[in-house]
Image 1 (cartoon, rainbow, N blue to C red):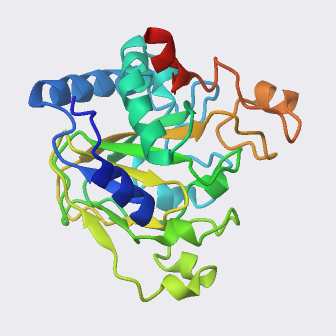
Image 2 (image 1 turned 180 degrees about the horizontal axis):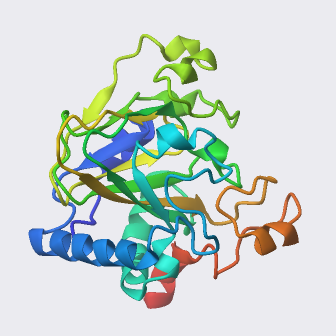
Length: 278
């Protein structure tokens, strides 16, 4: 795993709100990730969440247009909770350290992971932001997106609008079936030019949860597989939104509560761990 970040990469991420890392995983590591995640997805038998019987493609209370979004990608959330091998991958402190360095925070927790499989001829993902959907508000929340297959312009690569994270807010503009819906909330970005993330299997991207991003249609007869994980800076607090939280845990929370439940959002890296190791 190529987990060492340069100062230039860190500064590029902080300016643009995203970073593309080629050859993040070796070919053998890429195969292991793909095989491990494929098996974990198969064993979940279509259940989108560990705590629910909702199947991927069905209405989940987060995205209303189930028919459309069911053809955007197959989404399986928090595989780390139901598969020990995926847990080992997602809780890797080396990736946690990278997230901390990019976000310039002391510690990082898993918000949720998700396997994303864009099926042949799959619909595009409209321009959107991530953090406004989540159960906390932090300007440095971020995600890693690991390509398990080659990602091209033809099969639905990611696109980013550079620098938008510096001006967007926690207002939830939603995500609809129209590619440009987000520009009703952020009209100034309508004329910005996007950057495509065309990457080989084993490469990855990081992006800030307030960076406006999208993904294209899959115009091929093959899948486009990716594994992602969203990260919450340590010390974040509950904002009242349920998002991916299980019903019982959600009902136990009050707005302002610290989100530090290790069973739901494990701490995977903290800078103090480096001091303890000395």
